[in-house]
Amino acid sequence: MQLIDTHVHVNFDRFQGDLEEVSHRWREKGVSKLVHSCVHPDEFETIKKLSLQFPELYCAVGLHPLDTQRWEGEKTAQKILHFAQSFSKVVAIGEMGLDFYKDDNSSVQEEVCWRQLEIAHQLDKPVIIHCRDAAKAMVKLLQDFFKSKGKVNGVMHCWTGNPEETQWFLELGMYVSFSGVVTFKNAHSVHESAKIVPSERLLIETDCPFLAPAPYRGKRNEPAYVLHVAEKLAELRKEALEAIASTTTANAHKLFKL
Image 1: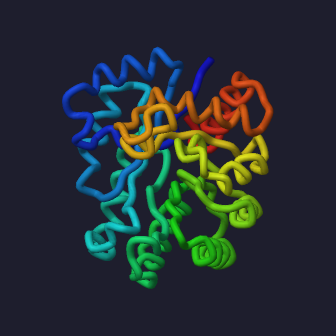
Image 2: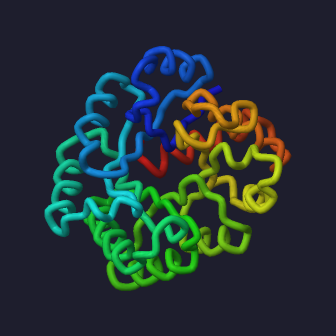
């Protein structure tokens, strides 16, 4: 049984001492490929080195909505564009998006997100979208972009929206990825959302080192734990674990052209 963790941050300091051991554990659990997300351009070279160290690790490049203070206009845009063009293991632009939970600079976030959507459209690469307390604004931005510039494929990563919000993004053609949050006992709205995503749009992730699933909650998360996400989805959707693994692996291959 193979699994693909579609969102990791193993470049973070919490993996400094034992990343080789962490990689052994993800392989033991059947994690055959991983997509390493990026929060700002200073990470590009480190992520590149990691993806060369671990052949199964692919990467995305972009700027997180909570890092807009690092956005230097077209200079940053060109950094993202150049790196995505120059390194063959870049499979997506992101993570990018809107976060109104921790910041209220909505106009700046929307401007930065729009520019990265343009890069993804230019390169024909999918986007990895971070969206927290900003579903309505994110839907509108995507709708406006699709009308004026053209369609971009992508995934709503670490999705915690309710079923109504989930449906909005499904109607835009987005994939939906669930993290360890779906294993939390009181995440009722996320549980309901997980039931309505069509099989062909479903993805799984850890978002490690954050949001460890229920058995490890409060501890460092790692890619091997994506198995717990798959198990919970199988339970919620009343499907076999092997079916969830097969479907989400095929979807990740398709979206990211792995």
